[in-house]
Amino acid sequence: MAPIDLCKWVVMQGDGSNYCNPGWGNGERQFYVPDAVFLMEDNLYLEAKRVAPFTPCLATPDQVCTPPCTSTYEYTSGKVYTDADLAFTYGRAEARVLLPFFQGAWPAVWAMPDTYPAEGVYGTWPLSGEIDVMEHVNFAGFVQQNIHWFDRDAKRPAESAIRVTRDDFGTAYHTYAVERSSSGRILFSVDGVPTGSPTWPPVDPTRPISPYDQPFVMILNLAVGGSFPGFVDPRSFDGGSQRMLVDYVSARDFFHV
Image (cartoon, rainbow, N blue to C red; front, side, top):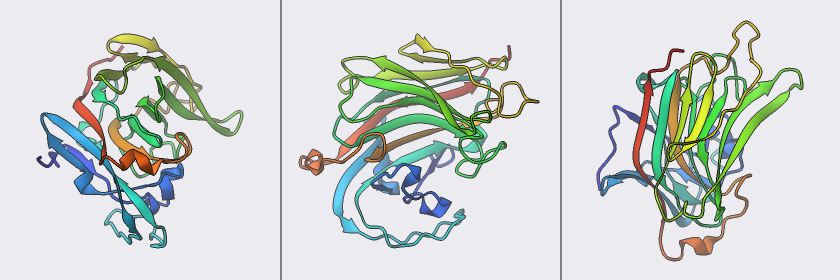
């Protein structure tokens, strides 16, 4: 077991309260801790554990809100994102991942503007966009690949979701990828097979492919519970921790067409 390279990765802590976003906006049940992220056997591990209930009070240098220090947690897990110097704009980002299967699991590989966790150029979520390269819940035989934006005409958040079905997401590694081009094309794929190319209206009418004309960082996390997976079955942890294994992550600029 070894620590990750902190010149490339930022390890997150807390429940989102420090960023005025308790439960990370989704009612998640975990508290992120640094020791839930580590390298072992040539993989990056994000490890979720059931622990004795605790009421944390965490202050961080970058906080924009003072945490209330009143919420109690019995699950810890891991979340990291790439340093802003490694952000990608027009190029390809991918990760090869083995997913955990349990009731309450919500592993994800996603991307946000390089100002994360602060708001992006176009404003607060989802004005500045979100790219979900992969998200999975519970025991589902599918993953979703999404983009999010703010629909100014409807005056509400919007998304374009692609569902990809397999029978071995929990038993085999798969490579989840997204490609972005300066012409405004976003292309998702799984194991090199294209899965969909969503479209969206520009957030800024003067910038035709906004908000996806900005650099984004990659984010990896294993959430426990929340609005998407629903309740957490504590028996899932009777045999020990649950882990999301990441073989590699790559993000690079090379598309300019």
